[in-house]
Image 1: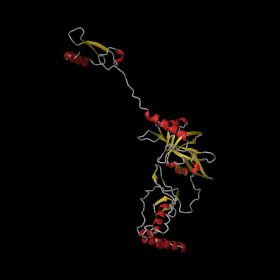
Image 2: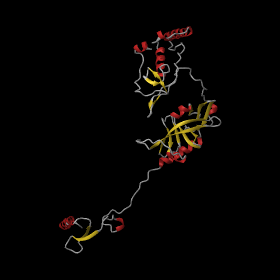
Image 3: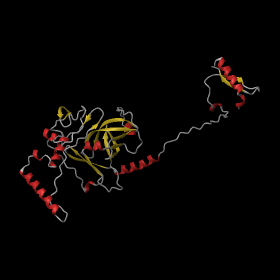
Image 4: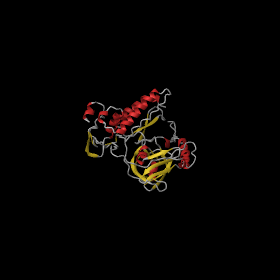
Amino acid sequence: MREICHMRLLNFPQAAGGKQMGKNRREWCDFHRAIGHSTEECWTLGAQLEGLVQQGRLGQYVVRTGRERTRARVEASGREEGNRDNSGRSRSPRPAMAGYRGTISTISGGEELRANLTPLGERRKGCAITFQEKDRRYEAAGDEPMVISVVAKDFKIERVLIDQGSLANILYGSTYKRMGLSRLKETPGERVPIKGTVELDTIFVEGGNAKMIPVLYTVIEVEASYNIIMGRPTLNRLKAIVSTYHLCMKYLTGEGVGAVWADSGMAKRCYEDSLRVGQRRSAINTLSLELDPRCHDERERPHPIEKLKEIQVGPWENQKTKIGTIMTEEQEAELICCLQRNGDVFA
């Protein structure tokens, strides 16, 4: 390992800054320079080493069996023959792609830094998810969306849109209120109308293949034709694959493969409702008041907060006005003099 490091072939990541990258606090990774997993179990390091081996840059550290050496010579000779072939087609067998053993996706999640680590040990074997023509229950008209139903908190929730392009799971505020949920982790400082987040155990079921997983929802207060939008985080945790051609979603269960089909009728109703929602415009509140100062209706004029008294501002008897009574005598005298001097400017 030290010799490989001195060769400067590895692409070391930035230091984790004391944050944990895994579940085991007792393990240390020399590659990430962080706790959480061991160097031997570090998938990123293993992936880089495997890539260097495939490039032939670590051949002195690799022990090949006789069969592997023979296959390497056959592939090399096949590539040479393919290059000499005037037809432009290579007759050598295509080299096998190096299979991925996992993915590390490290994001800043608030309280801690989490990493999805796949050990370099034996890979888990599971059932293969396949789609056949019989999985297409009906002819899809106009590329309909994947709309299903789920169960959460003993509620059957319809109008659930499966959106493989969404990075979050959206639970609309109206649905949240109808479920009678009270606890909500607030998310302040957002420019969009986000009320908070809530984690609910959600059941995907059709027939006897049910699967329950915890789903973290972002609750937003927006009018929409759907109740929930399921994004990529849920699909990954569910280990699900969506076929838009079959309008079917299949996922791995403990006993095999479960499947959920889209509700074509519900998808059409959601589309029709979305058109109505888009046509609604915000109401404009209008206040019809007479703002003409010549209005004689006292009910439409603002009333003073103090008592008034009448004073004479001109030589004629009808040249009078009213002033407040909470002024001092000096202030009142100055105001009366000002009004009398400028009486010609008043109506």
